[in-house]
Picture 1 (tube, rainbow, N blue to C red):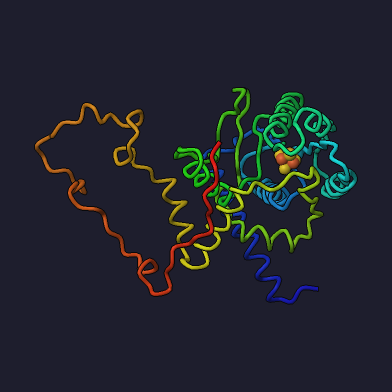
Picture 2 (picture 1 turned 90 degrees about the horizontal axis):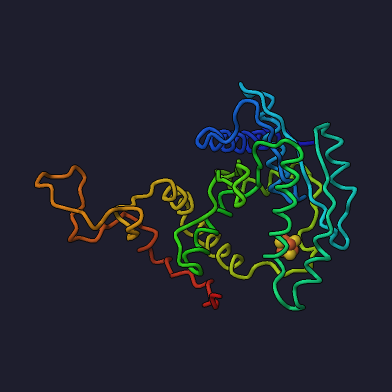
Length: 301
Ligand code: SF4
């Protein structure tokens, strides 16, 4: 039995997640009246949280939308196939478990010792797109959260040479579906205790035997370290993703640098050009500050 204080904190946490999801849905027009939203459920903490919060928003939303939970059973050895049906039956919601042995295909096609994730995710995507079509789905919801988005931004900068991340809403690579990420504003450090409180029946994500992506692990460690040492930095970086200034980057396809001409009139808040911008960031100058060195040089392929 939870104490009143624990109950109060649990309610506060749920409210924070609900607000974050509600804001993301509104900001990106993720869900519209009449949508059939396929909630991709892997059995991890993030997708359970997404389903729970979307279900709670559905009850009070001024629009009508359906939720259909979909899990893909990839036939990995040891996959506990009763866990999700039992959980979803208890929620009394529409769901579908798709059984497709992509595990054997991956094992068969990828040589021993090589990374399996790229083929595995390609096959999974194909099955999910096909399922979305069969179920008359209008939006496919994925459980990536704010920290996944920031990690991907850094991974792309460090190893891909691109300023790019995972957008909250996009058109699928086959052009046929709209994909949404309702947890885009949710912090992983809220999702972890929420999943614990709700006692979601988590299915381990290492059943395929594949190693967790080393580069992502390192970037995650770097961001967690920053979050501990410099509170607020993660939030500021995420805000930066929503506040892009193409004229102050260096991509000629986004801004027409070639035809720039002096206008002869002062520009309000204009660029002083000759000075480097300086910021009040006392955390960087504090005696405690030491550059984080959790990232080793990793070969880019
Ligand atoms: S970790 Fe395993 S299940 Fe996940 S994408 Fe990689 S190979 Fe597939």
